[in-house]
Amino acid sequence: MIFFLLKKLLKNTENFIFFSQLTFRMLASFLTSAIFFTLFAPVFIRKLKSIQFFQKVREENPKSHLKKRKTPTFGGLLIISSVLSSMFLWSNLNVKYIQYIFFSIFFYGLIGFIDDYKKIVYRNSKGLTAGWKYFWQSLLTIIMLFFLYTSNDFSNNFLKKDDISVGSSICLFVRVMISYLIIVGMSNAVNITDGLDGLVSMPLIFVYLSFSVISILSSQNIVSSELTVNNLHNIKDYSEIAIACFAIIGSCTGFLWFNIHPAKLFMGDVGSLSLGSTMGLISVLLEKELNLLLIGGIFTVEVSSVIFQIFYFKLFHKRFYLMAPIHHHYELLGYSEPEIIFKFWIISLMFSIFGLLITW
Image (cartoon, rainbow, N blue to C red; front, side):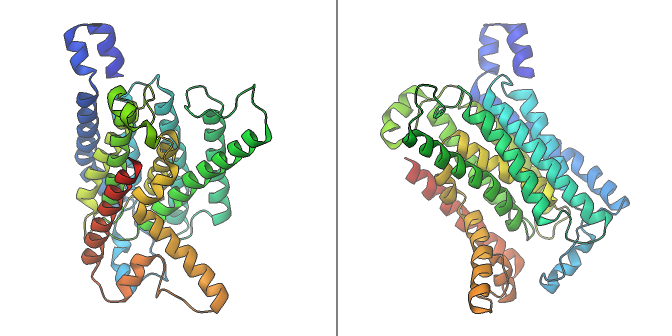
């Protein structure tokens, strides 16, 4: 919104050129979401406590988690509000990529909100059934991918009227399936990872920072021309994705201030589902879906530990891990919660750096 107002008021003057610069808007986007969150969080936490919107702890979780029952949840509402407000102010709303990100954050957040609300109303940790949650995730993802892959704004538009060959159809189907699995999978992966105080925030910051770098380089003529051999495309408006990424980074930074051990606020499914799906969506927009498996390696490891535990138990009728996801395994081995968190942060940083190197 500010972008359009400045463009109208200042037109093509030097002042507009300064305020419209990507670097300025990235910084403004970060500060807006971070300040928004930190200003409203104390009031929000007090309100949640007054209406007793507390975290519902699963009975099978480690006993040390019982003390988290009086910690307010629904922090994801504030995350979504700060991110969307910042994007609304500083991003170019005419860019289709920004519109897709808006859609993902809002509607996946809505699924998470319903899930969290049911947990609180019915006073259990189940919320939406797995079937209904997966149905709504799939429906939203299919809607997004339909508009994305039929849009001329997407660089790898496989739906070309003059190409209806079998090979092209198979290529399209495989690409859409990968995109679908990445968006839905990462939404659930972030949700699974969000099990310890502060654990999920820093890996999210690393991933979105990595995507910011990729989006900026992909939009620069000189840099991307040197890297086209490695499939780093020069696409107009890719740099706008960095505005959204920095809005999310700012919000996650503000959230981490209140979520660091011992946590004063949890994001809940409303935050984890929306941030996870958006992470997957941005990887699709940047055509780096498989790179996300490495850049967001900690999420890949977490969700893989759950999948492996299920299959191992079905085959051998015993557990491979003491408890899945894997961060609970280390808890039961006797590692302290802060130690697990900090070591997972370091591993996540290494994944992101290595993933960026592989992208080049």
